[in-house]
Length: 348
Image 1 (cartoon, rainbow, N blue to C red):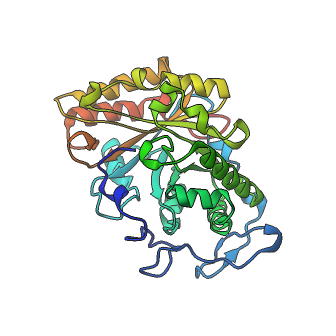
Image 2: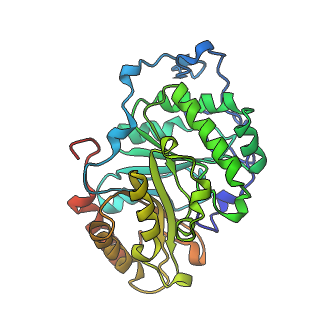
């Protein structure tokens, strides 16, 4: 997580991020309530009026695995140049207007207790982007309640909303769990993760791929192993890492080799789910992007996606790309490289 993002530090419940098809009435921060569904055949999505579940035929649900490129890497981003506007919800058009290419992945955030933004995800799918949704699990007390089953109905609703999208979605459940400020105990985290993952399977949300994603440092220190919920409970392995003045604008090769080894050992598709470079000196961003383009091909050829954190911050936490001609040229070179333009599916 990039420190200094104002919307990330606000208490849950202060500001609902949803105004979309499945958002609740103004001022509420609770997810919509679904009627009890004995047997859990399909909680589904809200109907056109947003008042109840709709039936989704399982044959219409595209398996999550279909989004993994056979070769190359998808390029994606979280795009937020005004952190106070619709916080946590990506605005990919701002970056696509610079690259003149559709993002392969669009990354948005949903904190615990905040409404699900169907409009953002359905628009991404309609325009050919794969949604990456980072779903926060709340503080340790809420995580523990989830682990004990107290939040099963909320989890089932989330599974129903995502399954109703029918197309692949990458779900980063409670990312960067290794950060001390999270206050998570590994045992509670693993228990909660397994419970949530099991409920999604019960709800037949086969289009949802679970992305396990600590920081890059957890892989270097080996702390990642204490949080690992098990191979059968994880679909993708991810990591977050940023290039800043305090680490001499570290390239991918200095941040992610331990992550890469871990992903190979566990035989999982790999995603760099948050990367960013701070442009505090002329040419730094452009040079970093050009180096990343090379490193992904040569050093990390099994990484299947890289998602940039194109967000406005202050000082070291300003990762915005557009605005510098050299940076924009390097970004276009990366995005238009055929290596970063595979279409999802077995054929690449």
